[in-house]
Length: 376
Image (cartoon, rainbow, N blue to C red; front, side, top):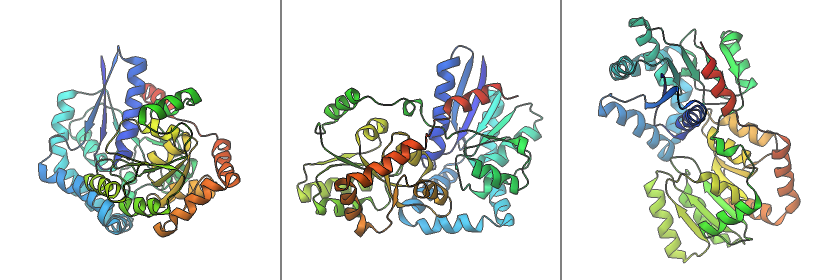
Protein backbone atom coordinates (compact mmCIF):
# COMPACT_ATOMS: atom_id res chain seq x y z
CA UNK A 1 0.00 0.00 0.00
CA UNK A 2 1.33 3.42 -0.99
CA UNK A 3 1.43 6.12 1.70
CA UNK A 4 0.91 9.85 1.17
CA UNK A 5 1.94 12.34 3.83
CA UNK A 6 -0.20 15.49 4.09
CA UNK A 7 1.51 18.08 6.31
CA UNK A 8 -0.27 21.06 7.87
CA UNK A 9 -0.04 23.33 10.95
CA UNK A 10 -2.67 24.20 13.54
CA UNK A 11 -2.69 27.90 12.69
CA UNK A 12 -6.35 28.47 11.93
CA UNK A 13 -8.58 26.15 9.94
CA UNK A 14 -7.55 27.39 6.51
CA UNK A 15 -4.64 24.95 6.19
CA UNK A 16 -6.16 21.84 7.78
CA UNK A 17 -9.56 22.09 6.06
CA UNK A 18 -8.26 21.67 2.47
CA UNK A 19 -5.85 18.94 3.58
CA UNK A 20 -8.64 17.01 5.26
CA UNK A 21 -11.00 17.49 2.31
CA UNK A 22 -8.50 16.09 -0.21
CA UNK A 23 -7.49 13.26 2.13
CA UNK A 24 -11.12 12.20 2.60
CA UNK A 25 -11.75 12.32 -1.14
CA UNK A 26 -8.77 10.10 -1.94
CA UNK A 27 -9.67 7.70 0.86
CA UNK A 28 -13.22 7.37 -0.45
CA UNK A 29 -11.98 6.38 -3.91
CA UNK A 30 -8.74 4.49 -3.18
CA UNK A 31 -9.03 3.18 0.37
CA UNK A 32 -7.72 -0.26 -0.56
CA UNK A 33 -4.36 0.80 -2.01
CA UNK A 34 -3.52 4.31 -0.69
CA UNK A 35 -3.02 5.36 2.90
CA UNK A 36 -3.24 9.08 3.73
CA UNK A 37 -1.37 10.28 6.81
CA UNK A 38 -2.61 13.70 7.92
CA UNK A 39 0.14 15.02 10.17
CA UNK A 40 0.81 18.16 12.16
CA UNK A 41 4.12 19.50 10.85
CA UNK A 42 5.15 20.35 14.42
CA UNK A 43 4.86 16.72 15.49
CA UNK A 44 8.00 15.90 17.45
CA UNK A 45 8.98 19.56 17.88
CA UNK A 46 9.60 20.99 21.32
CA UNK A 47 6.57 22.27 23.20
CA UNK A 48 7.91 25.82 23.27
CA UNK A 49 8.13 25.82 19.45
CA UNK A 50 4.50 24.69 19.12
CA UNK A 51 3.44 27.29 21.65
CA UNK A 52 5.20 30.15 19.88
CA UNK A 53 3.86 29.28 16.43
CA UNK A 54 0.33 28.12 17.29
CA UNK A 55 -0.49 30.31 20.30
CA UNK A 56 1.30 33.26 18.75
CA UNK A 57 -0.95 33.02 15.70
CA UNK A 58 -4.13 32.71 17.77
CA UNK A 59 -3.22 35.66 19.99
CA UNK A 60 -2.39 37.86 17.02
CA UNK A 61 -5.62 37.05 15.20
CA UNK A 62 -7.93 37.40 18.19
CA UNK A 63 -6.26 40.15 20.23
CA UNK A 64 -3.92 42.21 18.08
CA UNK A 65 -4.38 41.48 14.39
CA UNK A 66 -2.16 44.45 13.52
CA UNK A 67 0.84 42.44 14.76
CA UNK A 68 0.10 39.71 12.23
CA UNK A 69 -0.43 42.29 9.50
CA UNK A 70 2.88 43.97 10.37
CA UNK A 71 4.72 40.63 10.25
CA UNK A 72 3.07 39.89 6.90
CA UNK A 73 4.26 43.25 5.56
CA UNK A 74 7.90 42.92 6.62
CA UNK A 75 8.08 39.39 5.21
CA UNK A 76 7.80 40.94 1.77
CA UNK A 77 11.47 41.76 2.34
CA UNK A 78 13.41 38.75 1.08
CA UNK A 79 16.06 38.91 3.81
CA UNK A 80 13.42 38.71 6.56
CA UNK A 81 11.45 35.98 4.81
CA UNK A 82 14.57 33.86 4.42
CA UNK A 83 15.65 34.39 8.02
CA UNK A 84 12.22 33.34 9.31
CA UNK A 85 12.19 30.27 7.06
CA UNK A 86 15.67 29.31 8.27
CA UNK A 87 14.77 29.81 11.93
CA UNK A 88 11.54 27.80 11.75
CA UNK A 89 13.28 25.06 9.79
CA UNK A 90 16.04 24.85 12.41
CA UNK A 91 13.55 24.01 15.15
CA UNK A 92 11.05 21.98 13.12
CA UNK A 93 13.38 19.84 11.00
CA UNK A 94 14.54 17.31 13.64
CA UNK A 95 11.00 16.13 14.41
CA UNK A 96 10.00 16.16 10.75
CA UNK A 97 13.11 14.20 9.78
CA UNK A 98 12.28 11.38 12.17
CA UNK A 99 8.67 11.35 10.99
CA UNK A 100 9.50 11.21 7.27
CA UNK A 101 12.24 8.59 7.65
CA UNK A 102 10.01 6.36 9.80
CA UNK A 103 6.91 6.65 7.58
CA UNK A 104 8.67 6.48 4.19
CA UNK A 105 5.87 8.25 2.25
CA UNK A 106 5.50 7.83 -1.50
CA UNK A 107 4.41 11.47 -1.83
CA UNK A 108 4.38 14.55 0.40
CA UNK A 109 1.78 17.30 0.07
CA UNK A 110 2.43 20.56 1.94
CA UNK A 111 -0.41 22.75 3.21
CA UNK A 112 1.64 25.35 5.11
CA UNK A 113 4.50 27.61 4.04
CA UNK A 114 6.52 27.05 7.25
CA UNK A 115 7.01 23.40 6.25
CA UNK A 116 8.46 24.02 2.79
CA UNK A 117 12.11 24.69 3.68
CA UNK A 118 12.54 21.86 6.22
CA UNK A 119 10.88 19.26 3.98
CA UNK A 120 12.99 20.13 0.94
CA UNK A 121 16.15 20.16 3.07
CA UNK A 122 15.34 16.71 4.47
CA UNK A 123 14.76 15.29 0.99
CA UNK A 124 18.05 16.73 -0.26
CA UNK A 125 20.15 15.73 2.78
CA UNK A 126 18.89 12.13 2.82
CA UNK A 127 18.73 11.80 -0.98
CA UNK A 128 15.07 10.78 -0.85
CA UNK A 129 13.13 10.18 -4.05
CA UNK A 130 9.82 11.61 -2.82
CA UNK A 131 7.67 13.89 -5.03
CA UNK A 132 6.48 17.01 -3.19
CA UNK A 133 3.44 19.15 -4.04
CA UNK A 134 2.77 22.50 -2.38
CA UNK A 135 -0.88 23.51 -2.05
CA UNK A 136 -1.11 27.29 -1.64
CA UNK A 137 -4.14 27.63 0.61
CA UNK A 138 -4.43 31.41 0.05
CA UNK A 139 -6.39 31.73 -3.21
CA UNK A 140 -5.67 35.36 -4.16
CA UNK A 141 -3.06 37.07 -1.96
CA UNK A 142 -0.60 34.50 -0.69
CA UNK A 143 2.01 34.89 2.06
CA UNK A 144 5.52 35.59 0.67
CA UNK A 145 6.96 32.52 2.43
CA UNK A 146 5.11 30.23 0.01
CA UNK A 147 7.55 31.23 -2.75
CA UNK A 148 11.10 31.51 -1.38
CA UNK A 149 11.96 27.85 -2.16
CA UNK A 150 12.74 27.46 -5.86
CA UNK A 151 11.65 24.52 -7.99
CA UNK A 152 8.41 23.69 -6.20
CA UNK A 153 5.37 22.18 -7.88
CA UNK A 154 2.37 24.28 -6.92
CA UNK A 155 -1.37 23.89 -6.78
CA UNK A 156 -3.04 27.32 -6.71
CA UNK A 157 -6.71 28.26 -6.58
CA UNK A 158 -7.02 31.20 -8.98
CA UNK A 159 -5.67 32.52 -12.25
CA UNK A 160 -5.02 35.78 -10.37
CA UNK A 161 -2.51 34.08 -8.08
CA UNK A 162 -1.00 32.10 -10.95
CA UNK A 163 -0.17 35.33 -12.77
CA UNK A 164 1.40 36.75 -9.61
CA UNK A 165 3.52 33.61 -9.30
CA UNK A 166 4.70 33.89 -12.88
CA UNK A 167 5.60 37.51 -12.12
CA UNK A 168 7.81 36.19 -9.31
CA UNK A 169 9.71 34.07 -11.82
CA UNK A 170 7.96 30.74 -11.21
CA UNK A 171 7.64 28.65 -14.36
CA UNK A 172 4.19 28.17 -15.82
CA UNK A 173 4.67 24.39 -15.93
CA UNK A 174 5.19 24.37 -12.14
CA UNK A 175 1.73 25.87 -11.53
CA UNK A 176 -1.59 24.02 -11.69
CA UNK A 177 -4.82 25.97 -11.19
CA UNK A 178 -7.95 24.36 -9.77
CA UNK A 179 -11.14 25.60 -8.11
CA UNK A 180 -10.83 26.06 -4.36
CA UNK A 181 -10.93 22.86 -2.32
CA UNK A 182 -13.75 22.24 0.14
CA UNK A 183 -15.17 19.19 1.86
CA UNK A 184 -17.24 17.06 -0.55
CA UNK A 185 -20.38 17.89 1.44
CA UNK A 186 -20.27 21.38 -0.08
CA UNK A 187 -20.67 20.11 -3.64
CA UNK A 188 -24.33 18.94 -3.83
CA UNK A 189 -27.27 21.28 -3.29
CA UNK A 190 -29.21 20.73 -0.06
CA UNK A 191 -32.88 19.94 -0.67
CA UNK A 192 -35.69 21.90 1.00
CA UNK A 193 -36.81 18.71 2.72
CA UNK A 194 -33.33 18.23 4.18
CA UNK A 195 -33.19 21.88 5.29
CA UNK A 196 -36.49 21.49 7.12
CA UNK A 197 -35.13 18.44 8.91
CA UNK A 198 -31.93 20.28 9.92
CA UNK A 199 -33.97 23.20 11.27
CA UNK A 200 -36.04 20.84 13.37
CA UNK A 201 -33.01 18.91 14.66
CA UNK A 202 -31.17 22.11 15.65
CA UNK A 203 -34.21 23.75 17.20
CA UNK A 204 -34.81 26.57 14.70
CA UNK A 205 -38.26 27.69 13.59
CA UNK A 206 -39.59 26.27 10.30
CA UNK A 207 -39.86 29.65 8.54
CA UNK A 208 -37.54 31.98 10.47
CA UNK A 209 -34.74 34.02 8.90
CA UNK A 210 -31.36 33.01 10.35
CA UNK A 211 -28.28 35.19 10.87
CA UNK A 212 -25.13 33.16 11.45
CA UNK A 213 -22.00 34.65 13.04
CA UNK A 214 -19.00 32.55 12.07
CA UNK A 215 -15.35 33.44 11.66
CA UNK A 216 -13.54 30.10 11.32
CA UNK A 217 -11.81 27.73 13.72
CA UNK A 218 -10.68 30.47 16.12
CA UNK A 219 -14.08 32.15 16.30
CA UNK A 220 -15.21 35.55 15.07
CA UNK A 221 -12.94 38.51 15.94
CA UNK A 222 -15.01 41.03 17.88
CA UNK A 223 -17.77 38.45 18.18
CA UNK A 224 -18.93 39.68 21.59
CA UNK A 225 -19.54 43.24 20.37
CA UNK A 226 -21.17 42.02 17.16
CA UNK A 227 -23.57 39.81 19.08
CA UNK A 228 -24.58 42.58 21.50
CA UNK A 229 -25.22 45.07 18.69
CA UNK A 230 -27.42 42.63 16.78
CA UNK A 231 -29.41 41.61 19.84
CA UNK A 232 -30.13 45.22 20.78
CA UNK A 233 -31.58 45.86 17.30
CA UNK A 234 -34.24 43.22 18.01
CA UNK A 235 -34.50 42.05 14.40
CA UNK A 236 -37.04 39.58 13.12
CA UNK A 237 -34.55 36.72 12.82
CA UNK A 238 -32.99 33.90 14.78
CA UNK A 239 -29.28 34.22 15.55
CA UNK A 240 -26.57 31.57 15.78
CA UNK A 241 -22.94 32.13 16.72
CA UNK A 242 -20.11 29.62 16.20
CA UNK A 243 -17.31 30.39 18.64
CA UNK A 244 -14.91 27.69 17.43
CA UNK A 245 -12.04 27.09 19.82
CA UNK A 246 -12.44 30.56 21.35
CA UNK A 247 -13.60 29.67 24.86
CA UNK A 248 -13.73 33.30 25.96
CA UNK A 249 -16.13 34.17 23.15
CA UNK A 250 -18.28 31.16 24.05
CA UNK A 251 -18.42 32.21 27.69
CA UNK A 252 -19.18 35.85 26.84
CA UNK A 253 -21.95 34.77 24.46
CA UNK A 254 -23.61 32.74 27.21
CA UNK A 255 -23.43 35.75 29.55
CA UNK A 256 -25.02 37.98 26.92
CA UNK A 257 -27.83 35.47 26.38
CA UNK A 258 -28.53 35.30 30.13
CA UNK A 259 -28.25 39.07 30.66
CA UNK A 260 -30.67 40.00 27.88
CA UNK A 261 -32.83 36.86 28.29
CA UNK A 262 -32.59 36.11 24.60
CA UNK A 263 -34.73 33.27 23.25
CA UNK A 264 -33.76 33.49 19.58
CA UNK A 265 -30.03 32.82 20.08
CA UNK A 266 -28.08 29.58 19.74
CA UNK A 267 -24.44 29.36 20.81
CA UNK A 268 -22.00 26.75 19.53
CA UNK A 269 -18.37 25.99 20.28
CA UNK A 270 -16.21 24.04 17.83
CA UNK A 271 -18.62 22.06 15.66
CA UNK A 272 -18.43 19.57 12.82
CA UNK A 273 -21.80 20.54 11.32
CA UNK A 274 -20.97 23.94 9.83
CA UNK A 275 -22.36 22.64 6.54
CA UNK A 276 -25.75 22.12 8.19
CA UNK A 277 -25.76 25.56 9.82
CA UNK A 278 -24.85 27.24 6.54
CA UNK A 279 -27.53 25.35 4.64
CA UNK A 280 -30.33 26.89 6.74
CA UNK A 281 -28.81 30.36 7.23
CA UNK A 282 -29.70 33.44 5.20
CA UNK A 283 -26.91 35.86 6.13
CA UNK A 284 -23.45 35.06 7.50
CA UNK A 285 -21.41 37.62 9.40
CA UNK A 286 -17.81 36.57 8.93
CA UNK A 287 -14.17 37.41 8.59
CA UNK A 288 -12.69 36.74 5.20
CA UNK A 289 -10.67 33.55 5.65
CA UNK A 290 -10.44 31.57 2.42
CA UNK A 291 -12.17 28.35 3.49
CA UNK A 292 -14.96 30.07 5.40
CA UNK A 293 -15.66 32.54 2.57
CA UNK A 294 -15.80 29.81 -0.05
CA UNK A 295 -18.01 27.59 2.10
CA UNK A 296 -20.50 30.45 2.50
CA UNK A 297 -20.58 31.20 -1.22
CA UNK A 298 -20.77 27.55 -2.26
CA UNK A 299 -23.88 27.24 -0.09
CA UNK A 300 -25.39 30.28 -1.83
CA UNK A 301 -25.49 32.40 1.32
CA UNK A 302 -24.82 36.12 1.61
CA UNK A 303 -21.60 37.00 3.47
CA UNK A 304 -21.38 40.24 5.44
CA UNK A 305 -17.67 40.75 6.04
CA UNK A 306 -16.87 42.55 9.28
CA UNK A 307 -13.08 42.03 9.25
CA UNK A 308 -10.23 40.65 7.20
CA UNK A 309 -6.49 40.31 7.64
CA UNK A 310 -4.54 42.78 5.56
CA UNK A 311 -3.08 41.77 3.14
CA UNK A 312 -3.49 38.01 3.29
CA UNK A 313 -7.30 38.04 3.23
CA UNK A 314 -7.68 41.24 1.21
CA UNK A 315 -7.93 39.29 -2.04
CA UNK A 316 -10.72 37.15 -0.61
CA UNK A 317 -12.66 40.26 0.41
CA UNK A 318 -12.19 41.85 -3.02
CA UNK A 319 -13.32 38.67 -4.76
CA UNK A 320 -16.57 38.68 -2.75
CA UNK A 321 -17.32 42.40 -2.85
CA UNK A 322 -16.13 43.30 -6.37
CA UNK A 323 -18.36 40.52 -7.70
CA UNK A 324 -21.31 41.88 -5.68
CA UNK A 325 -21.77 38.59 -3.87
CA UNK A 326 -21.47 40.06 -0.38
CA UNK A 327 -21.07 43.23 1.67
CA UNK A 328 -18.12 44.70 3.54
CA UNK A 329 -19.04 46.50 6.76
CA UNK A 330 -16.11 46.89 9.15
CA UNK A 331 -17.94 49.29 11.47
CA UNK A 332 -19.71 47.02 13.96
CA UNK A 333 -22.03 49.87 14.97
CA UNK A 334 -23.44 49.89 11.42
CA UNK A 335 -23.86 46.11 11.17
CA UNK A 336 -27.44 45.94 12.54
CA UNK A 337 -28.68 48.43 9.93
CA UNK A 338 -26.94 46.51 7.14
CA UNK A 339 -28.47 43.24 8.32
CA UNK A 340 -31.90 44.75 8.78
CA UNK A 341 -31.66 46.20 5.27
CA UNK A 342 -30.97 42.77 3.83
CA UNK A 343 -33.80 41.19 5.78
CA UNK A 344 -36.36 43.82 4.73
CA UNK A 345 -35.17 44.65 1.18
CA UNK A 346 -35.91 41.47 -0.70
CA UNK A 347 -34.66 42.82 -4.04
CA UNK A 348 -31.24 43.69 -2.60
CA UNK A 349 -30.95 40.26 -1.00
CA UNK A 350 -32.05 38.47 -4.17
CA UNK A 351 -29.54 40.47 -6.23
CA UNK A 352 -26.66 39.21 -4.06
CA UNK A 353 -27.82 35.58 -4.09
CA UNK A 354 -28.34 35.79 -7.86
CA UNK A 355 -24.77 36.98 -8.33
CA UNK A 356 -23.52 34.10 -6.17
CA UNK A 357 -25.48 31.64 -8.30
CA UNK A 358 -24.27 33.19 -11.57
CA UNK A 359 -20.62 32.90 -10.43
CA UNK A 360 -21.01 29.12 -10.89
CA UNK A 361 -18.46 28.33 -8.19
CA UNK A 362 -17.23 24.75 -8.13
CA UNK A 363 -15.54 22.57 -5.56
CA UNK A 364 -12.08 21.55 -6.77
CA UNK A 365 -11.61 18.65 -4.35
CA UNK A 366 -12.10 15.99 -7.03
CA UNK A 367 -9.72 17.58 -9.54
CA UNK A 368 -7.03 18.25 -6.93
CA UNK A 369 -7.30 14.69 -5.61
CA UNK A 370 -6.89 13.25 -9.10
CA UNK A 371 -3.91 15.51 -9.81
CA UNK A 372 -2.14 14.40 -6.61
CA UNK A 373 -2.85 10.75 -7.38
CA UNK A 374 -1.37 11.03 -10.88
CA UNK A 375 1.56 13.31 -9.96
CA UNK A 376 5.00 11.81 -10.53
